[in-house]
Length: 246
Image (cartoon, rainbow, N blue to C red; front, side):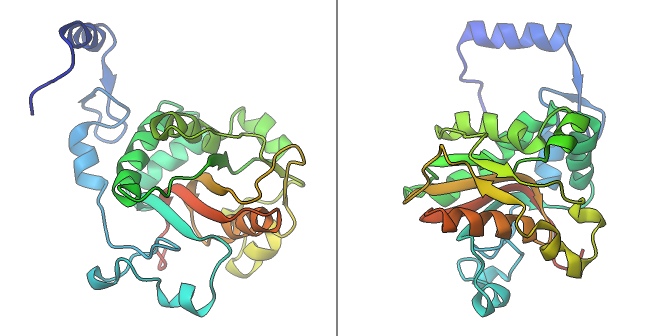
């Protein structure tokens, strides 16, 4: 495909590539982003998914809710994701979350944007506002950043949708969901979130941003709180979705 960028832009990018070469976070080869184009094509694969929870489905069931969502409808209305939380992409999530590899966040946002565009075009279903899942104060101090917010900012610019980092508050510190037993995860996040009194979400479509969706209990709790505050629709927007068997 020919490079249609203006000549000065192409020259600038060529100079930057020469002066500040970067390596792919997966293969170590030359890359213009955090992940090279070859690895992105190899590992970021579109698969049929339930439109509500984003769990993989059969090819003929792409637009249909899965059995679990039909049996017990969640508080959220949709989930958009770019990939499965599986090797090697799961390692990138861990690098962003625990390794402060913040350069991965704009790449994840770009990949997410590419996954979202076919869903929302031509139907006008973009959220009115994006909201990252908040960290507790202690964990935010310990980590120094909120990985969900790091993804939300560039995604908001790409979609042309405002981001509201303070829309949600975490009322109490919770143990990491990854370390909780499956039966304890719902209880772990119950009552952990609240909508800021200064933000009116009544009648609005809220996009909730997170790096990964595993059991879905955190996002279910967030969606329930937003719906109680009057939100008309809640869409989860996550980089990776843990398959049911994982």
